[in-house]
Image (cartoon, rainbow, N blue to C red):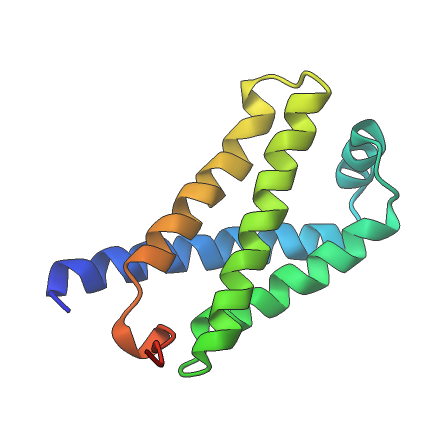
Length: 126
Protein backbone atom coordinates (compact mmCIF):
# COMPACT_ATOMS: atom_id res chain seq x y z
CA UNK A 1 0.00 0.00 0.00
CA UNK A 2 1.51 3.33 -1.03
CA UNK A 3 2.35 5.76 1.75
CA UNK A 4 -0.11 8.31 0.32
CA UNK A 5 -2.99 5.82 0.69
CA UNK A 6 -2.01 5.06 4.30
CA UNK A 7 -2.01 8.76 5.10
CA UNK A 8 -5.42 9.24 3.45
CA UNK A 9 -6.77 6.22 5.32
CA UNK A 10 -5.57 7.33 8.74
CA UNK A 11 -6.65 10.95 8.35
CA UNK A 12 -10.14 9.92 7.22
CA UNK A 13 -10.39 7.19 9.85
CA UNK A 14 -9.31 9.42 12.72
CA UNK A 15 -11.79 12.14 11.69
CA UNK A 16 -14.50 9.51 11.23
CA UNK A 17 -13.75 8.03 14.66
CA UNK A 18 -13.79 11.47 16.31
CA UNK A 19 -17.07 12.36 14.60
CA UNK A 20 -18.79 9.11 15.47
CA UNK A 21 -17.42 9.03 19.01
CA UNK A 22 -18.43 12.61 19.79
CA UNK A 23 -21.93 12.27 18.35
CA UNK A 24 -22.29 8.86 19.99
CA UNK A 25 -21.47 10.31 23.40
CA UNK A 26 -23.83 13.26 22.86
CA UNK A 27 -26.59 10.84 21.88
CA UNK A 28 -25.84 8.48 24.75
CA UNK A 29 -26.13 11.23 27.36
CA UNK A 30 -29.21 12.53 25.53
CA UNK A 31 -28.50 16.24 25.49
CA UNK A 32 -31.65 18.32 25.24
CA UNK A 33 -30.77 19.53 21.74
CA UNK A 34 -30.43 15.95 20.50
CA UNK A 35 -33.68 14.87 22.16
CA UNK A 36 -35.52 17.79 20.53
CA UNK A 37 -34.05 16.95 17.12
CA UNK A 38 -35.17 13.31 17.43
CA UNK A 39 -38.68 14.48 18.32
CA UNK A 40 -38.70 16.82 15.33
CA UNK A 41 -37.59 13.95 13.09
CA UNK A 42 -40.36 11.75 14.52
CA UNK A 43 -38.19 9.23 16.37
CA UNK A 44 -38.50 8.12 20.02
CA UNK A 45 -35.85 9.55 22.35
CA UNK A 46 -34.73 6.09 23.53
CA UNK A 47 -33.30 5.55 20.05
CA UNK A 48 -30.56 8.06 20.93
CA UNK A 49 -29.09 5.68 23.50
CA UNK A 50 -29.17 2.74 21.11
CA UNK A 51 -27.52 4.70 18.28
CA UNK A 52 -24.99 6.22 20.69
CA UNK A 53 -23.86 2.84 22.01
CA UNK A 54 -23.57 1.35 18.52
CA UNK A 55 -21.57 4.33 17.24
CA UNK A 56 -19.08 4.01 20.11
CA UNK A 57 -18.75 0.25 19.57
CA UNK A 58 -18.35 0.86 15.83
CA UNK A 59 -15.46 3.23 16.49
CA UNK A 60 -13.75 0.57 18.59
CA UNK A 61 -14.30 -2.02 15.84
CA UNK A 62 -12.86 0.22 13.12
CA UNK A 63 -9.79 1.24 15.14
CA UNK A 64 -8.69 -2.07 16.67
CA UNK A 65 -6.37 -4.29 14.63
CA UNK A 66 -7.64 -7.48 12.97
CA UNK A 67 -11.30 -8.55 12.91
CA UNK A 68 -11.99 -7.50 9.29
CA UNK A 69 -15.56 -8.88 9.30
CA UNK A 70 -16.39 -6.82 12.36
CA UNK A 71 -14.95 -3.75 10.61
CA UNK A 72 -17.17 -4.38 7.57
CA UNK A 73 -20.22 -4.49 9.84
CA UNK A 74 -19.13 -1.30 11.60
CA UNK A 75 -18.68 0.56 8.31
CA UNK A 76 -22.08 -0.74 7.14
CA UNK A 77 -23.71 0.37 10.39
CA UNK A 78 -22.14 3.82 10.10
CA UNK A 79 -23.39 4.07 6.52
CA UNK A 80 -26.94 3.05 7.48
CA UNK A 81 -27.12 5.50 10.38
CA UNK A 82 -25.70 8.45 8.43
CA UNK A 83 -27.68 7.83 5.25
CA UNK A 84 -30.77 7.45 7.45
CA UNK A 85 -29.96 10.80 9.07
CA UNK A 86 -29.65 12.48 5.67
CA UNK A 87 -32.94 10.99 4.48
CA UNK A 88 -34.70 11.90 7.73
CA UNK A 89 -33.59 15.53 7.50
CA UNK A 90 -34.58 15.61 3.84
CA UNK A 91 -38.02 14.16 4.61
CA UNK A 92 -38.91 16.99 6.98
CA UNK A 93 -37.44 19.72 4.77
CA UNK A 94 -34.40 20.66 6.86
CA UNK A 95 -31.83 23.05 5.42
CA UNK A 96 -28.22 22.52 4.43
CA UNK A 97 -26.97 23.08 7.99
CA UNK A 98 -28.65 19.86 9.13
CA UNK A 99 -27.20 17.87 6.22
CA UNK A 100 -23.59 18.94 6.68
CA UNK A 101 -22.63 16.59 9.55
CA UNK A 102 -24.18 13.40 8.21
CA UNK A 103 -22.94 14.04 4.65
CA UNK A 104 -19.40 14.78 5.89
CA UNK A 105 -19.44 11.56 7.91
CA UNK A 106 -20.70 9.63 4.86
CA UNK A 107 -17.75 10.94 2.85
CA UNK A 108 -15.33 9.97 5.63
CA UNK A 109 -16.93 6.51 5.88
CA UNK A 110 -16.39 5.94 2.16
CA UNK A 111 -12.80 7.26 2.16
CA UNK A 112 -11.81 5.27 5.25
CA UNK A 113 -13.40 2.09 3.90
CA UNK A 114 -11.94 2.49 0.40
CA UNK A 115 -8.37 3.23 1.53
CA UNK A 116 -8.20 0.72 4.40
CA UNK A 117 -5.07 -1.45 4.41
CA UNK A 118 -5.19 -5.04 3.19
CA UNK A 119 -4.91 -6.41 6.74
CA UNK A 120 -8.17 -4.59 7.57
CA UNK A 121 -10.08 -6.02 4.58
CA UNK A 122 -12.03 -9.21 4.19
CA UNK A 123 -10.13 -11.73 2.12
CA UNK A 124 -12.21 -13.37 -0.58
CA UNK A 125 -12.28 -17.16 -0.49
CA UNK A 126 -12.65 -17.44 -4.27
